[in-house]
Image 1 (cartoon, rainbow, N blue to C red):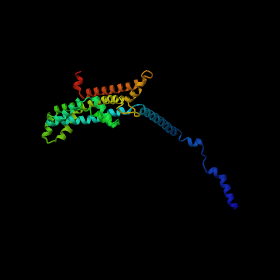
Image 2 (spheres, helix red, strand yellow):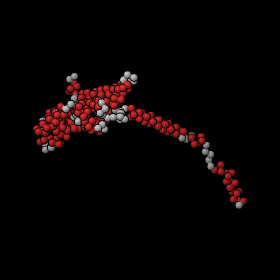
Image 3 (cartoon, one colour):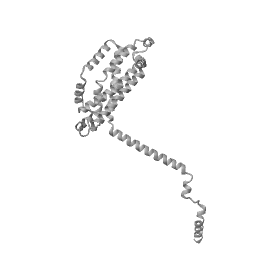
Image 4 (spheres, rainbow, N blue to C red):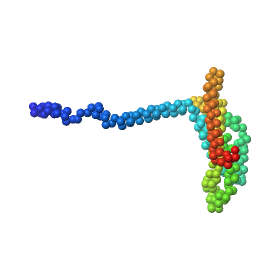
Length: 268
């Protein structure tokens, strides 16, 4: 027992010499520069990420994304349907062309505003419903444009060569006709976005489009019309955003027209 206690006392006395001394400066010295860089990187990215998250949340809270969603949704639906009708009518010809163009003429003859009001009253104000309603009166101009371009393309030599090589109608339309009508389609889609935003804003202002609490520029204007005298900025900013957005989309359409049709831009 005495020998064991003597050995423990000797180990306690010699322990400091066996274990190296670890101080704060010893631990920090080899890693000082990398640690500070990593810490600065983490702090900067956390701060930047937090700022971006705040800005994104503010934008989503303030900007009526649904107005833009309706615009692009209408451009996609109306563009797809109008391009399909125009390609089918222009390439097939005969009775197919006659039936599709009479249907187009019938839709063009409908009073657009009355049709929108009645359809919105019947089918509701959900975003997909509004997109379909506005698309139903937005495809006709594109269909007529695509039909005209298709009529001028389908009798060219490369189309005749594809037919002589045994290509079917679907292959000819998808591989040869469609690439030649993409220019007018893209330009018309930008104008469709602008028109759809205006139509949706008008419907929402009349209380027939997308309703609160979903924010759109139209129902913002409708909710602020009682404050024109006391707080006019509540009317100015939604109207200004509609104006700026439609102008930007129209300018984009003009630029795409000049880029995709250089002969037209050179003659101006």
